Amino acid sequence: MLIKGRLYAFILLIFLGIGESCQQSSTVPVPADTAYFPLQVGDYWIYQVTQNAYSSTNPVAERVYQVQEKISSSYTQNGQVFFLMEESVKTSSQPDWQLTAIRTVYKNQSEVVRLENNVPVVKLLFPIAATTSWNTNIYNARPDTLLHYEDSGRSFTLDTRRFDNTISVVGANDSTLISQQKNRQVYASNVGLVYRENVSLAYCQTSPDCIGKGIVESGTRQKWVLVSSNHLP
Image (tube, rainbow, N blue to C red; front, side, top):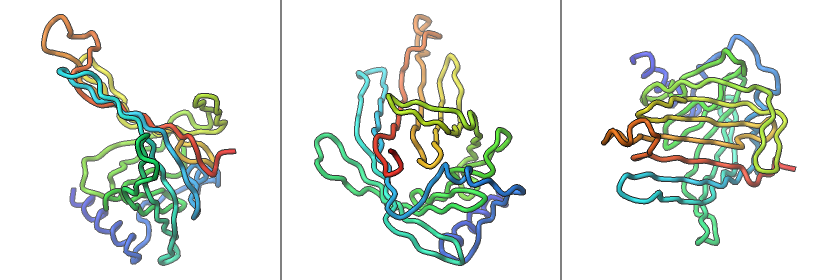
């Protein structure tokens, strides 16, 4: 915990422009690795988000909206380029985008780090390989959360759009008679994040009639699907 605390303090110095990335890799990644997270001023990604909230006392509450992430500007400190990413939300009842957050993100030969609510999280670690795993919260005080890569280089289809070269970032993926936890993100080369799924469900345990039948008692299921981007043809 002491080591992690020191790393947290050091990464904050990075965002203040008086440090350098402290995660190192013994292997320099090929350009294809960093291409999974393109970053240039003017880049944008629009996602269709579907979120279902479950409760034992109410019907499933579904919320559908769009999230736009747009790189608005950048600055350089000590040779590292930092990008400002504006996040906006729009629902069917809102004609205009509503700005909800401005995040800082940087990419180097070792990692991609994004500051979310002033908390730095490691989105990707290089090189990309089946043996690569990392703690996304290494630079903050949150509980350790391990991620790893799967399906490197495989194609991925969303509706009628096919991405020929993708990588999956996988976190929790546990399903028992009591609960289900799932965290998966899919990145396409030269496009970025194209799909994300987060599931956290608790199954009914209140009576013998429902135990083991997959009846959801509480929790959420959220899916992000890329629908528009300057990186799409």
